[in-house]
Image 1: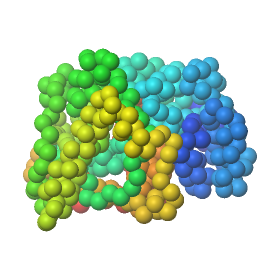
Image 2: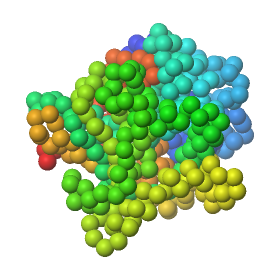
Image 3: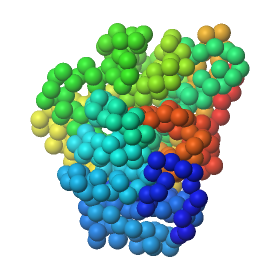
Image 4: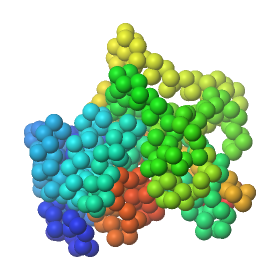
Length: 419
């Protein structure tokens, strides 16, 4: 590949543009495949992991244009190898989780070296530790540490951002009641997501002081005392008939974490969405027949998983039944995947908006590969047009509208309308 012409950035003279760290994992391979098919000519990409042999196998299965991608050996237990990797590239894309167990050293070296970073985490405690330990270093070096660039939490974060932007453009004030509805979703449950949940459950069992952080809706706020709600959990309704969609609905199992990211975005943006915004996420189950029972069953999924992971004896049963890290559904199964999500919001003037974020991809696999792949490409190719901010960021604050446009170019629908 020929070297692209990049605008000057603190890392513009580095040897590589993107390193996919964790390329030998299931999702890592999908991300490498997306970049091999869609990265413009001249973007310098490398694959990284612990085993050269496994990296060679992954590279051999990619399109021919990836045949000369460099292979980088790095191990999360060897900080020196992580630093050697990070200093060679402009962006590190990390899929190596659970992040609380494996991720902090890499975030640290990227923050120190001014290397941009994106990941797929959905782990509150990891992101909180990342903020507390590396925010200052990232700001000083100019690094953008952008967490949660997959199905956790891109649709939520961009959906609320674009809703608030449209209300602002229309002169309709800021957001008040704001609810993301999962209207339709079909796809596999990621083994990596489950493993992250296991680690977080184990962490709070070992340190009960972590419980309040994990469940605090504003746990990731840069200024917790400035937030409108006291420390503690916002009440969750297990079953409701939604006024927004007319559907029966239950809390979305990823909603607690996604909400923490959205609230961090709002605070980092100077509460541009509105200090009075109240945000939550639900999954719609329909209007008739068994829809209420389905909603109750879905509401019980997360508590049941937490109980299973927390209870000796049950833990072994749950671990045998659920997918393991590195596993994933077949290509045929993934091809049937899709998701449709809607952000319904009321503003301070009484205006109502609906933002749709949807894609014809399995959300946890192919869709996530597109989301994080395009996040990395945005940092490489669009950096001068991205929000002028460094530190520990979110998709909305670190990548913003330019990123949303990239996803639309890849087949996503992202549209805001007056309700």
